[in-house]
Image (cartoon, rainbow, N blue to C red; front, side):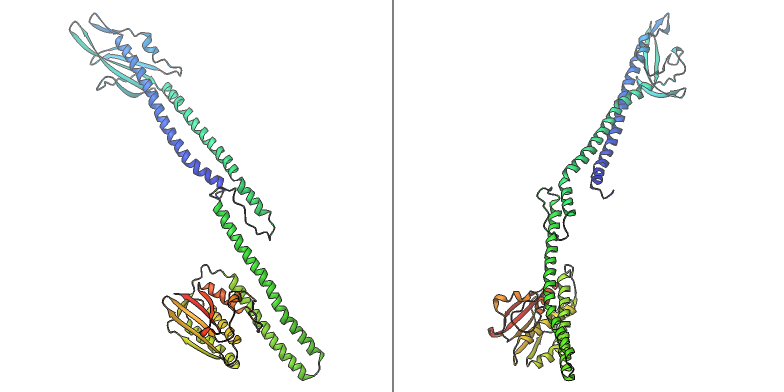
Length: 451
Protein backbone atom coordinates (compact mmCIF):
# COMPACT_ATOMS: atom_id res chain seq x y z
CA UNK A 1 0.00 0.00 0.00
CA UNK A 2 2.93 2.40 0.64
CA UNK A 3 3.70 2.25 -3.11
CA UNK A 4 0.16 3.32 -4.01
CA UNK A 5 0.06 6.71 -5.73
CA UNK A 6 -3.45 7.34 -4.43
CA UNK A 7 -2.46 6.55 -0.85
CA UNK A 8 0.68 8.66 -1.04
CA UNK A 9 -1.19 11.66 -2.43
CA UNK A 10 -3.90 11.21 0.19
CA UNK A 11 -1.25 11.12 2.91
CA UNK A 12 0.42 14.25 1.52
CA UNK A 13 -2.99 15.93 1.57
CA UNK A 14 -4.44 14.50 4.78
CA UNK A 15 -1.44 14.79 7.08
CA UNK A 16 -1.00 18.58 6.78
CA UNK A 17 -4.76 19.07 6.51
CA UNK A 18 -5.33 17.03 9.67
CA UNK A 19 -2.65 18.99 11.51
CA UNK A 20 -4.28 22.21 10.32
CA UNK A 21 -7.75 21.00 11.39
CA UNK A 22 -6.48 19.96 14.82
CA UNK A 23 -4.74 23.29 15.29
CA UNK A 24 -7.77 25.20 14.02
CA UNK A 25 -10.05 23.08 16.22
CA UNK A 26 -7.88 23.77 19.26
CA UNK A 27 -7.91 27.51 18.56
CA UNK A 28 -11.67 27.41 17.91
CA UNK A 29 -12.16 25.62 21.23
CA UNK A 30 -10.05 28.18 23.05
CA UNK A 31 -11.95 31.00 21.38
CA UNK A 32 -15.30 29.39 22.20
CA UNK A 33 -14.32 28.96 25.85
CA UNK A 34 -13.20 32.58 26.06
CA UNK A 35 -16.47 33.73 24.49
CA UNK A 36 -18.56 31.56 26.83
CA UNK A 37 -16.53 32.74 29.82
CA UNK A 38 -16.98 36.38 28.78
CA UNK A 39 -20.75 35.91 28.49
CA UNK A 40 -20.87 34.25 31.91
CA UNK A 41 -18.64 36.92 33.47
CA UNK A 42 -20.85 39.69 32.11
CA UNK A 43 -23.95 37.94 33.47
CA UNK A 44 -22.31 37.53 36.89
CA UNK A 45 -21.30 41.20 36.92
CA UNK A 46 -24.81 42.32 35.93
CA UNK A 47 -26.34 40.20 38.69
CA UNK A 48 -23.84 41.51 41.25
CA UNK A 49 -24.60 45.11 40.33
CA UNK A 50 -28.35 44.53 40.66
CA UNK A 51 -27.80 42.95 44.08
CA UNK A 52 -25.54 45.81 45.13
CA UNK A 53 -28.33 48.19 44.15
CA UNK A 54 -30.75 46.22 46.33
CA UNK A 55 -28.75 47.03 49.50
CA UNK A 56 -30.40 49.93 51.42
CA UNK A 57 -29.96 51.88 54.63
CA UNK A 58 -32.67 51.37 57.21
CA UNK A 59 -32.33 53.14 60.56
CA UNK A 60 -28.56 53.23 60.31
CA UNK A 61 -28.48 49.58 59.38
CA UNK A 62 -27.82 47.99 56.01
CA UNK A 63 -30.18 45.34 54.71
CA UNK A 64 -30.74 43.75 51.31
CA UNK A 65 -34.01 42.93 49.63
CA UNK A 66 -32.77 40.91 46.64
CA UNK A 67 -34.98 41.36 43.62
CA UNK A 68 -35.89 38.26 41.51
CA UNK A 69 -34.31 39.83 38.44
CA UNK A 70 -30.87 39.56 40.03
CA UNK A 71 -31.25 35.78 40.18
CA UNK A 72 -33.05 35.46 36.83
CA UNK A 73 -30.05 36.98 35.08
CA UNK A 74 -28.15 33.79 35.99
CA UNK A 75 -30.96 31.34 35.28
CA UNK A 76 -29.73 28.32 33.29
CA UNK A 77 -31.49 25.50 31.43
CA UNK A 78 -28.60 23.22 32.45
CA UNK A 79 -29.39 23.31 36.18
CA UNK A 80 -26.59 25.60 37.26
CA UNK A 81 -26.51 26.52 40.96
CA UNK A 82 -26.31 30.23 41.86
CA UNK A 83 -24.58 31.52 44.99
CA UNK A 84 -24.35 35.03 46.37
CA UNK A 85 -23.08 36.65 49.52
CA UNK A 86 -23.24 40.28 50.70
CA UNK A 87 -21.41 41.60 53.72
CA UNK A 88 -19.90 44.74 55.11
CA UNK A 89 -16.16 44.79 54.72
CA UNK A 90 -14.74 44.25 58.17
CA UNK A 91 -18.30 43.86 59.32
CA UNK A 92 -21.29 41.53 59.53
CA UNK A 93 -22.98 39.61 56.71
CA UNK A 94 -26.01 41.19 55.15
CA UNK A 95 -27.44 38.44 52.92
CA UNK A 96 -26.61 35.27 51.04
CA UNK A 97 -24.97 31.95 51.85
CA UNK A 98 -21.72 31.21 53.55
CA UNK A 99 -20.93 28.46 51.00
CA UNK A 100 -19.51 31.04 48.61
CA UNK A 101 -15.99 32.10 49.45
CA UNK A 102 -15.62 35.84 49.17
CA UNK A 103 -12.45 37.34 47.73
CA UNK A 104 -11.92 41.04 48.18
CA UNK A 105 -10.68 42.29 44.81
CA UNK A 106 -7.74 44.64 44.47
CA UNK A 107 -9.87 46.59 42.04
CA UNK A 108 -13.61 46.32 41.53
CA UNK A 109 -14.90 44.21 39.84
CA UNK A 110 -12.75 41.12 40.34
CA UNK A 111 -13.44 37.62 39.00
CA UNK A 112 -12.15 34.43 40.53
CA UNK A 113 -12.66 30.66 40.46
CA UNK A 114 -13.65 28.58 43.46
CA UNK A 115 -15.17 25.22 44.27
CA UNK A 116 -18.38 24.32 46.09
CA UNK A 117 -19.37 20.74 46.85
CA UNK A 118 -16.85 19.48 44.31
CA UNK A 119 -18.21 21.64 41.50
CA UNK A 120 -16.19 24.42 39.87
CA UNK A 121 -17.76 27.81 40.39
CA UNK A 122 -17.07 31.08 38.62
CA UNK A 123 -17.59 34.15 40.81
CA UNK A 124 -17.27 37.93 40.77
CA UNK A 125 -16.90 40.42 43.61
CA UNK A 126 -17.65 44.12 43.57
CA UNK A 127 -17.28 46.78 46.24
CA UNK A 128 -19.92 49.47 46.75
CA UNK A 129 -19.51 52.36 49.17
CA UNK A 130 -22.64 53.17 51.21
CA UNK A 131 -23.23 56.63 52.76
CA UNK A 132 -25.86 57.62 55.32
CA UNK A 133 -25.95 60.77 57.51
CA UNK A 134 -22.22 61.19 57.35
CA UNK A 135 -21.61 57.51 57.97
CA UNK A 136 -19.70 55.57 55.33
CA UNK A 137 -19.35 51.82 54.87
CA UNK A 138 -18.18 49.55 52.09
CA UNK A 139 -20.08 46.43 51.17
CA UNK A 140 -18.66 43.40 49.33
CA UNK A 141 -21.08 41.74 46.92
CA UNK A 142 -20.03 38.31 45.55
CA UNK A 143 -22.04 36.27 43.05
CA UNK A 144 -21.07 32.83 41.72
CA UNK A 145 -22.51 30.14 39.47
CA UNK A 146 -21.49 26.67 38.45
CA UNK A 147 -20.10 26.33 34.90
CA UNK A 148 -22.50 23.88 33.25
CA UNK A 149 -24.02 26.48 30.92
CA UNK A 150 -20.60 27.96 30.14
CA UNK A 151 -19.25 24.54 29.13
CA UNK A 152 -22.34 23.78 27.06
CA UNK A 153 -22.16 27.15 25.30
CA UNK A 154 -18.46 26.63 24.53
CA UNK A 155 -19.20 23.20 23.06
CA UNK A 156 -22.03 24.63 20.95
CA UNK A 157 -19.67 27.25 19.60
CA UNK A 158 -16.70 25.05 18.60
CA UNK A 159 -18.07 21.57 17.86
CA UNK A 160 -19.94 22.65 14.70
CA UNK A 161 -16.67 24.10 13.41
CA UNK A 162 -14.90 20.80 14.10
CA UNK A 163 -17.62 18.93 12.22
CA UNK A 164 -17.25 21.41 9.38
CA UNK A 165 -13.52 20.72 9.26
CA UNK A 166 -14.20 16.97 9.22
CA UNK A 167 -16.58 17.46 6.29
CA UNK A 168 -13.85 19.36 4.44
CA UNK A 169 -11.42 16.46 4.96
CA UNK A 170 -13.98 13.92 3.76
CA UNK A 171 -14.79 15.99 0.67
CA UNK A 172 -11.07 16.40 -0.05
CA UNK A 173 -10.52 12.63 0.16
CA UNK A 174 -13.41 11.94 -2.20
CA UNK A 175 -12.27 14.61 -4.66
CA UNK A 176 -8.69 13.32 -4.67
CA UNK A 177 -9.79 9.72 -5.25
CA UNK A 178 -12.24 10.65 -7.99
CA UNK A 179 -9.81 13.13 -9.55
CA UNK A 180 -6.94 10.65 -9.59
CA UNK A 181 -9.12 7.95 -11.11
CA UNK A 182 -10.26 10.37 -13.80
CA UNK A 183 -6.84 11.84 -14.53
CA UNK A 184 -5.08 8.46 -14.61
CA UNK A 185 -7.51 6.89 -17.06
CA UNK A 186 -5.12 7.45 -19.97
CA UNK A 187 -2.30 5.87 -17.99
CA UNK A 188 -4.48 2.85 -17.23
CA UNK A 189 -5.35 2.61 -20.94
CA UNK A 190 -1.62 2.73 -21.68
CA UNK A 191 -1.07 -0.07 -19.16
CA UNK A 192 -3.70 -2.21 -20.88
CA UNK A 193 -2.11 -1.47 -24.25
CA UNK A 194 1.30 -2.68 -23.06
CA UNK A 195 -0.16 -5.75 -21.33
CA UNK A 196 -2.10 -6.82 -24.41
CA UNK A 197 0.79 -6.44 -26.86
CA UNK A 198 2.34 -9.37 -28.68
CA UNK A 199 5.91 -10.26 -27.63
CA UNK A 200 7.34 -9.00 -30.94
CA UNK A 201 5.30 -5.77 -31.04
CA UNK A 202 7.88 -3.07 -30.34
CA UNK A 203 6.09 0.06 -31.56
CA UNK A 204 6.30 3.29 -29.51
CA UNK A 205 3.68 4.09 -26.90
CA UNK A 206 1.30 6.98 -27.53
CA UNK A 207 1.79 9.87 -25.11
CA UNK A 208 -0.17 12.76 -26.63
CA UNK A 209 -3.13 12.24 -24.24
CA UNK A 210 -0.99 12.02 -21.11
CA UNK A 211 -0.31 14.84 -18.70
CA UNK A 212 2.96 16.70 -19.16
CA UNK A 213 4.35 15.17 -15.93
CA UNK A 214 3.89 11.63 -17.30
CA UNK A 215 5.16 12.21 -20.83
CA UNK A 216 8.87 12.08 -19.91
CA UNK A 217 8.31 8.58 -18.48
CA UNK A 218 6.62 7.38 -21.67
CA UNK A 219 9.26 9.10 -23.80
CA UNK A 220 11.98 7.28 -21.85
CA UNK A 221 10.12 3.98 -22.32
CA UNK A 222 9.83 4.69 -26.06
CA UNK A 223 13.56 5.34 -26.23
CA UNK A 224 14.14 2.04 -24.47
CA UNK A 225 11.76 0.31 -26.91
CA UNK A 226 13.67 1.84 -29.82
CA UNK A 227 16.96 0.54 -28.40
CA UNK A 228 15.46 -2.90 -27.89
CA UNK A 229 14.10 -2.84 -31.45
CA UNK A 230 17.51 -1.91 -32.82
CA UNK A 231 19.18 -4.58 -30.70
CA UNK A 232 16.61 -7.18 -31.76
CA UNK A 233 17.00 -6.26 -35.42
CA UNK A 234 20.77 -6.46 -35.02
CA UNK A 235 20.47 -9.91 -33.44
CA UNK A 236 18.14 -11.10 -36.20
CA UNK A 237 20.59 -9.91 -38.84
CA UNK A 238 23.47 -11.45 -36.93
CA UNK A 239 21.74 -14.82 -36.66
CA UNK A 240 20.82 -14.77 -40.35
CA UNK A 241 24.36 -13.84 -41.42
CA UNK A 242 25.93 -16.28 -38.96
CA UNK A 243 23.77 -19.11 -40.25
CA UNK A 244 24.77 -18.24 -43.80
CA UNK A 245 28.47 -18.00 -42.90
CA UNK A 246 28.49 -21.27 -40.96
CA UNK A 247 26.52 -23.17 -43.57
CA UNK A 248 29.32 -23.01 -46.18
CA UNK A 249 32.19 -24.44 -44.06
CA UNK A 250 29.89 -27.03 -42.51
CA UNK A 251 28.71 -28.11 -45.95
CA UNK A 252 32.32 -28.28 -47.15
CA UNK A 253 33.30 -30.28 -44.08
CA UNK A 254 30.45 -32.72 -44.67
CA UNK A 255 31.40 -33.13 -48.34
CA UNK A 256 35.03 -33.80 -47.41
CA UNK A 257 33.92 -36.38 -44.89
CA UNK A 258 31.75 -38.14 -47.48
CA UNK A 259 34.64 -38.04 -49.97
CA UNK A 260 37.01 -39.64 -47.44
CA UNK A 261 34.51 -42.39 -46.67
CA UNK A 262 34.19 -43.33 -50.35
CA UNK A 263 37.95 -43.84 -50.84
CA UNK A 264 40.11 -46.59 -49.40
CA UNK A 265 43.38 -45.15 -50.66
CA UNK A 266 45.38 -44.06 -47.61
CA UNK A 267 47.05 -41.16 -49.41
CA UNK A 268 43.68 -39.80 -50.56
CA UNK A 269 42.23 -40.18 -47.08
CA UNK A 270 45.20 -38.36 -45.52
CA UNK A 271 44.89 -35.56 -48.05
CA UNK A 272 41.17 -35.28 -47.34
CA UNK A 273 41.74 -35.32 -43.57
CA UNK A 274 44.30 -32.54 -43.97
CA UNK A 275 41.75 -30.49 -45.90
CA UNK A 276 39.12 -31.26 -43.23
CA UNK A 277 41.54 -30.09 -40.53
CA UNK A 278 42.03 -26.84 -42.40
CA UNK A 279 38.27 -26.41 -42.85
CA UNK A 280 37.72 -27.15 -39.16
CA UNK A 281 40.31 -24.53 -38.22
CA UNK A 282 38.57 -21.97 -40.39
CA UNK A 283 35.24 -22.94 -38.82
CA UNK A 284 36.64 -22.58 -35.29
CA UNK A 285 38.15 -19.20 -36.19
CA UNK A 286 34.85 -18.03 -37.67
CA UNK A 287 32.94 -19.23 -34.60
CA UNK A 288 35.33 -17.43 -32.26
CA UNK A 289 34.96 -14.22 -34.24
CA UNK A 290 31.18 -14.56 -34.21
CA UNK A 291 31.19 -14.99 -30.44
CA UNK A 292 33.54 -12.04 -29.99
CA UNK A 293 31.37 -9.84 -32.22
CA UNK A 294 28.21 -10.89 -30.36
CA UNK A 295 29.84 -10.03 -27.02
CA UNK A 296 31.11 -6.70 -28.32
CA UNK A 297 27.74 -5.68 -29.79
CA UNK A 298 25.61 -6.64 -26.78
CA UNK A 299 27.94 -5.45 -24.02
CA UNK A 300 26.92 -2.42 -21.94
CA UNK A 301 29.77 0.09 -22.12
CA UNK A 302 27.84 2.99 -20.58
CA UNK A 303 29.83 2.64 -17.33
CA UNK A 304 33.04 1.29 -18.89
CA UNK A 305 36.06 2.70 -17.09
CA UNK A 306 38.89 0.25 -17.85
CA UNK A 307 42.46 0.15 -16.58
CA UNK A 308 45.74 1.69 -17.62
CA UNK A 309 46.99 -0.19 -20.70
CA UNK A 310 50.32 0.40 -22.45
CA UNK A 311 49.59 0.23 -26.19
CA UNK A 312 53.30 -0.28 -26.87
CA UNK A 313 53.30 -3.56 -24.94
CA UNK A 314 50.05 -4.68 -26.58
CA UNK A 315 51.38 -3.88 -30.06
CA UNK A 316 54.69 -5.66 -29.44
CA UNK A 317 52.91 -8.86 -28.41
CA UNK A 318 50.58 -8.77 -31.44
CA UNK A 319 53.44 -8.14 -33.88
CA UNK A 320 55.27 -11.17 -32.50
CA UNK A 321 52.15 -13.28 -33.09
CA UNK A 322 51.69 -12.10 -36.70
CA UNK A 323 55.35 -11.97 -37.72
CA UNK A 324 55.28 -15.54 -39.06
CA UNK A 325 52.11 -14.88 -41.11
CA UNK A 326 53.68 -11.76 -42.62
CA UNK A 327 56.87 -13.67 -43.40
CA UNK A 328 54.97 -16.47 -45.16
CA UNK A 329 53.14 -13.94 -47.31
CA UNK A 330 56.30 -12.01 -48.09
CA UNK A 331 55.15 -8.88 -46.26
CA UNK A 332 57.54 -6.54 -44.50
CA UNK A 333 56.03 -5.80 -41.09
CA UNK A 334 57.40 -2.68 -39.37
CA UNK A 335 56.49 -0.70 -36.26
CA UNK A 336 57.07 2.80 -34.89
CA UNK A 337 55.97 2.78 -31.26
CA UNK A 338 56.00 5.77 -28.90
CA UNK A 339 57.21 5.20 -25.36
CA UNK A 340 54.37 7.01 -23.57
CA UNK A 341 51.22 5.44 -25.03
CA UNK A 342 49.05 4.58 -22.02
CA UNK A 343 45.26 4.62 -22.38
CA UNK A 344 42.36 3.58 -20.17
CA UNK A 345 40.78 0.42 -21.48
CA UNK A 346 40.68 -3.35 -21.59
CA UNK A 347 43.97 -5.00 -22.52
CA UNK A 348 42.34 -8.07 -24.10
CA UNK A 349 39.99 -6.01 -26.28
CA UNK A 350 42.78 -3.65 -27.34
CA UNK A 351 44.90 -6.66 -28.27
CA UNK A 352 42.05 -7.92 -30.49
CA UNK A 353 41.75 -4.46 -32.07
CA UNK A 354 45.46 -4.28 -32.98
CA UNK A 355 45.50 -7.92 -34.12
CA UNK A 356 42.52 -7.50 -36.47
CA UNK A 357 43.87 -4.31 -38.03
CA UNK A 358 47.32 -5.80 -38.72
CA UNK A 359 45.87 -9.16 -39.78
CA UNK A 360 43.58 -7.44 -42.31
CA UNK A 361 46.47 -5.38 -43.69
CA UNK A 362 48.75 -8.44 -44.03
CA UNK A 363 46.09 -10.57 -45.70
CA UNK A 364 45.05 -7.95 -48.27
CA UNK A 365 48.54 -6.67 -49.13
CA UNK A 366 50.26 -8.45 -52.03
CA UNK A 367 53.68 -10.10 -51.67
CA UNK A 368 56.65 -7.76 -51.24
CA UNK A 369 54.29 -5.21 -49.73
CA UNK A 370 54.75 -3.19 -46.56
CA UNK A 371 52.59 -3.00 -43.43
CA UNK A 372 53.47 -0.47 -40.74
CA UNK A 373 52.07 -0.02 -37.23
CA UNK A 374 52.41 3.52 -35.90
CA UNK A 375 51.65 4.60 -32.32
CA UNK A 376 52.34 8.22 -31.41
CA UNK A 377 51.14 10.94 -29.06
CA UNK A 378 49.58 14.09 -30.51
CA UNK A 379 48.60 16.71 -27.93
CA UNK A 380 45.83 15.08 -25.86
CA UNK A 381 45.37 12.19 -28.27
CA UNK A 382 47.14 8.88 -28.82
CA UNK A 383 47.02 7.80 -32.46
CA UNK A 384 47.25 4.15 -33.50
CA UNK A 385 47.55 3.73 -37.28
CA UNK A 386 48.05 0.63 -39.43
CA UNK A 387 49.11 1.48 -43.00
CA UNK A 388 49.76 -0.73 -46.01
CA UNK A 389 50.54 -0.33 -49.69
CA UNK A 390 47.96 -2.84 -50.85
CA UNK A 391 44.98 -2.28 -53.16
CA UNK A 392 43.16 -0.18 -50.57
CA UNK A 393 39.39 0.21 -50.25
CA UNK A 394 37.27 2.48 -52.45
CA UNK A 395 36.16 5.62 -50.58
CA UNK A 396 32.47 4.95 -51.24
CA UNK A 397 32.49 1.63 -49.33
CA UNK A 398 34.86 2.47 -46.48
CA UNK A 399 32.03 3.05 -44.04
CA UNK A 400 30.36 -0.23 -45.03
CA UNK A 401 33.38 -2.41 -44.27
CA UNK A 402 32.60 -1.95 -40.57
CA UNK A 403 29.30 -3.78 -41.09
CA UNK A 404 29.34 -7.46 -40.08
CA UNK A 405 29.99 -9.91 -42.97
CA UNK A 406 30.62 -7.16 -45.52
CA UNK A 407 33.69 -7.73 -47.72
CA UNK A 408 35.00 -5.10 -50.09
CA UNK A 409 36.70 -7.73 -52.26
CA UNK A 410 36.50 -11.42 -53.04
CA UNK A 411 39.53 -12.19 -50.88
CA UNK A 412 39.23 -14.93 -48.28
CA UNK A 413 37.83 -13.74 -44.96
CA UNK A 414 34.79 -13.68 -42.71
CA UNK A 415 33.99 -9.98 -42.93
CA UNK A 416 33.94 -9.72 -39.14
CA UNK A 417 37.35 -8.27 -38.29
CA UNK A 418 36.57 -4.59 -38.80
CA UNK A 419 33.08 -4.98 -37.31
CA UNK A 420 34.72 -6.23 -34.11
CA UNK A 421 37.22 -3.37 -34.29
CA UNK A 422 34.41 -0.80 -34.50
CA UNK A 423 32.68 -2.16 -31.38
CA UNK A 424 35.96 -2.16 -29.42
CA UNK A 425 36.61 1.43 -30.54
CA UNK A 426 33.13 2.44 -29.33
CA UNK A 427 33.74 0.73 -25.99
CA UNK A 428 36.85 2.84 -25.47
CA UNK A 429 35.12 6.07 -26.58
CA UNK A 430 37.67 6.36 -29.37
CA UNK A 431 37.25 7.00 -33.11
CA UNK A 432 38.36 5.10 -36.20
CA UNK A 433 38.72 6.33 -39.75
CA UNK A 434 39.89 4.67 -42.97
CA UNK A 435 42.11 6.93 -45.06
CA UNK A 436 44.39 6.69 -48.06
CA UNK A 437 47.79 5.18 -47.39
CA UNK A 438 51.11 7.03 -47.76
CA UNK A 439 51.40 8.66 -51.15
CA UNK A 440 47.73 7.96 -51.87
CA UNK A 441 48.43 4.22 -52.18
CA UNK A 442 47.00 1.49 -50.00
CA UNK A 443 44.99 2.07 -46.85
CA UNK A 444 45.50 3.61 -43.42
CA UNK A 445 43.26 2.59 -40.49
CA UNK A 446 43.61 5.39 -37.92
CA UNK A 447 42.31 5.03 -34.34
CA UNK A 448 42.38 8.04 -32.00
CA UNK A 449 42.18 7.67 -28.21
CA UNK A 450 41.47 10.66 -25.97
CA UNK A 451 43.70 10.94 -22.91
